[in-house]
Image 1 (cartoon, rainbow, N blue to C red):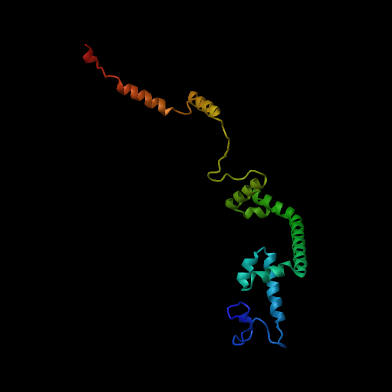
Image 2 (cartoon, rainbow, N blue to C red; image 1 turned 90 degrees about the vertical axis):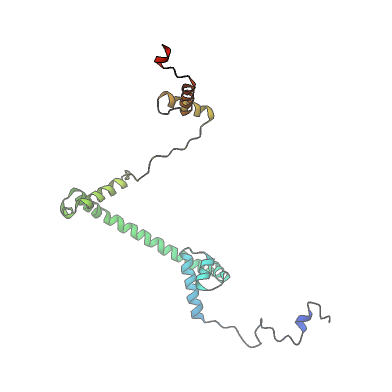
Length: 197
């Protein structure tokens, strides 16, 4: 066999054993409890919306392991169960909010009016409560610099017409015209009354 051929290195007796494979009779073993913990953490992080690469980096595992775990049928079923439980909790929370809303409304009215339990409320709490009410009713407080912004595209003739109207109404002052008039004034000879006679 030619020593320069690629196949020679596989048949070289001086090379030693191939460490990529296990010797006969030796099985690869895993600590099931450790694997279970890692898989549970992967599932938890997937449910929180983390990316595969972020999960792999944080846990010190390969992104392929995370991908295999994410795509396994068992994990997909578990994620569906977790999402269902989350949604059920949200429904329960919504129900609890609806049940307590009348009490909260009454308390807010008392704070705003200064009656009942609201008699102890100071002016700052009353103002904040009133502001919250207005905000929820569709009248939010003005924020600084929160003017109205309008974007519009105009054609050249429209822009000229707007400029003309602004000049006519005195909103805008034409500086080019004023500069030209001032230049003409300065080019005229100055004649004093005394010199004219």
